[in-house]
Image (cartoon, rainbow, N blue to C red):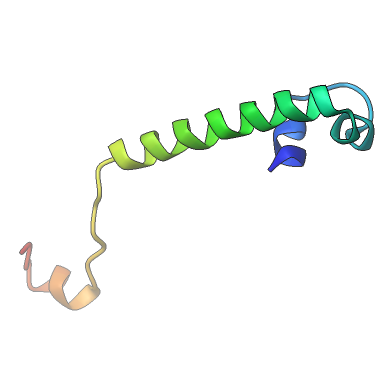
Length: 63
């Protein structure tokens, strides 16, 4: 989670140095938590389109 956030924020320097530094690690952890909440909200807000199989499409069965 923290390494992914380091990569997504395009931080300069070594990922190992950033992860071992407690202050930077905490900032990356908070950023990762905020990103996870935002992505969960966006996923919940996205409309759900069920996939239909070929047989129901051929029969024009939309239920």
